[in-house]
Length: 340
Ligand code: PHE
Image (cartoon, rainbow, N blue to C red; front, top):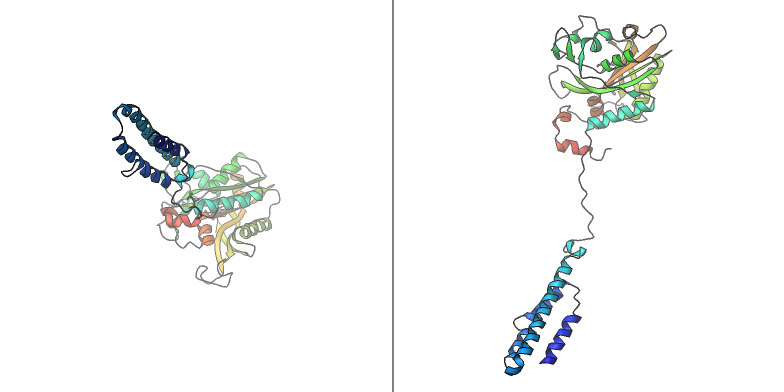
């Protein structure tokens, strides 16, 4: 019997399982109902009384060693790094973590800012709550101009006139007031107009406006700058055309159209079969505006332009309803995931 105990002990010491299943197999063989230990206990019943004490102790020690060995190997197996992946197909491609995406308005605003930064413009910002001077008076709006009307402007107070800016031209006024030419700024920001909300208008939207003032700035400079912008934004094939227009703060003034990037100018639904899409207003800064901000209009001239970020984004990405930009529906926003 001693021999049997020793040979079992040896088997336990030499036991080196490679998988969890082997440990379980070993446990059944040793400690199971028909296992080695039970056989040993059966034999033990026949042992002479004077040997019972010593043999009993040895058998118990053997049983403990077996149990300890099994527990040790089990914990070892469970803690192996491979254990975490058990049952997982390691050859499958991983699931990518979904990271947030930039809002299309931010994307397009950053792009516009980038393009003009390359032309040497710097970014200027200003308050959303403004006074009448910076939004209207300094920009040559006559006192009875309809844009001052309650229909268009959200007033906060009358006398003094405090209002939500209706365009970021107010930032250009502030820039002219505090700096000397040459001036080259772009002014991105939120603007507010009392408009009925529809697929093409909202009471809050975003603009980027620009201002360039120096000696001998001409309309040709304006046209080249806008053409450069259009090609950078809509592609090398983009063409522009200018139509005469009116703004109180520029003379002459123009609306800028870019060739429709969807049909290449042949005519489609989006460009209403004209081949052209309106993208911004622009013009040569009116001498009255320069003088109002303390700039010598005899020495300096300049141009200004302004565009709606929502509009550019709609044209660039083919978005048909402006309200989508404000709803924050993730199904809409996720479509811009891959756009940096
Ligand atoms: N401020 C004008 C607007 O909000 C845009 C504009 C800016 C037009 C500069 C001409 C020159 O519509």
